[in-house]
Amino acid sequence: MLDTPKLPERHYLNNGHGLKSWLLTKDHKRIAIMYLISISAMFLLGGLFAGAVRLELMTPEGDLFLADTYNKMFTMHGVVMVFFFLIPSTPAVLGNFLIPPMIGAKDLAFPRINLLSLYIFWLGAAFFFYALFAGGVDTGWTFYTPFSSFSSNTNVIPTALGAFISGFSSILTGLNFIVTIHRMRAPGLTWFRLPLFVWAHYATSLIQVLGTPVVAITIIMVFVERAFGFGIFDPTRGGDPVLFQHLFWFYSHPAVYIMILPAMGVISEIVSTFSRKTIFGYSFVAFSSLAIAVFGFIVWAHHMFVAGISTYSALVFSFLSFSVAIPSAVKTFNWAATLYKGAISFETPMLYAYGFFGLFLIGGLTGLFLATLGTDIHLHDTYFVVSHFHYIMVGGAIMGYLGGLHFWWPKLVGRMYSEFLSRVSAILVFVGFNLTFFPQFILGYMGMPRRYHAYPDEFQVLNILSSAGAGVLGIGYLLPVIYFLWSLKRGEVAGPNPWGASGLEWQIPSPPPTENFKVQPVVHGEPYEYTPHVAREANLV
Image 1 (tube, rainbow, N blue to C red):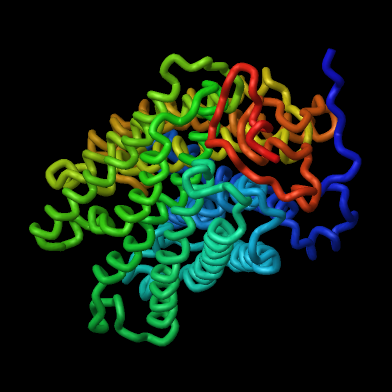
Image 2: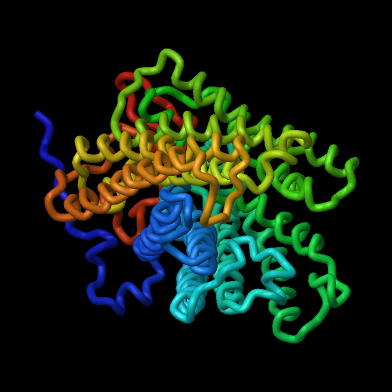
């Protein structure tokens, strides 16, 4: 009879008490927990703005908010979700917590810089909250010029500075991950023995370090033009607004992969664990992460097919945009091949993985319509774009993030959550998401433009369906808050490896000690080895 698992006497959560011990910590795990609390608060705020938008759109007349207020609502929703949730969520929380134990390290390469990145994130959020309480901003999350640089009378500068400052948090996190993965792997942990979660974060870090400075410079130029009247983007002053779009999307399209690549890494871990199989085509999946990072930098102008770029350059960018689907397809087909004839179980993390497959597939396929010149002209700036974006970002990135949070929650806190409630939550999220955003594909095809608070009567039924789905989706997102908090005191003790997963992080206690490993592990086996009677411990000495 197996012994009942017990919480370790000493772990990172009880190694030092009081607020000061947390605010001055250099432990990557505590920093990850503080990121988790911070971005969860931002996610809640962004969700409230989204709920206000959906309430407005239940009636055609635009009778809940004035047009200016509605503009601020969708702008603040986009700024919060993109810059303060989607970009930092999986890397700052799961990447921060898991990369060191996954590679056999005691911490990240630069613990103080890791803590600094958290403070910088908070500083950027403070600028955003200042703008919020000072009346908000109405430019849209893309800050398109010359509206943002000249004609908007709202709080553009503090909002843009908040995004600018938070970008440095992203850069420092990416730099830390790159150095850690290069220099601190356990003996025997070669590049092709790394977990695919680590490969995904390595590719993401390259985008963070190389791409984020571009948008930072762009925001500074908006600030200079707005504050000092220089003619950079404003055509009435000799500037070029299309230049802003080139600079903004050169970063912001790769930023899509900052959001989605870590989620893909999570899905690889979940699929392997809950099918009890080695990832099919491991090296192809690993290199596809790097390929996505590279392709992400050369497709930015597909956002600009109607912005006046030449037909020939549009054709080139259309072709490149189709090409970026290839490495994503490699991952998808390899995950499907891994599941084939696997011993599949349907715990909550696997439900989120299945949800990811369905939603990301729809998001990816509908992206082809926007990469095609003829259809993009009709669909540009309609609700079709809104739906496509959310199928990738919410349906892909957040499903992966929630799947990872459920998968590694026992490792974070040492306790299990309610399996029944978590399955209900996963189903509500999937159903609510489709009910919210699939009608928007139809609305966009029918010609409803985005960012309008009033619309023709014939669009009302689909908008009511979308708003009803948002309510279901909101319940699905709130349930994890309840059962995760419940699990902290009343959840069943998890033990080191409740899922029977492979990987070094599952060979240490839950919650882990501050130093992660008492003895430096040495890796001898290949990744994702599952045999009926041999555990991963056989690969360690």
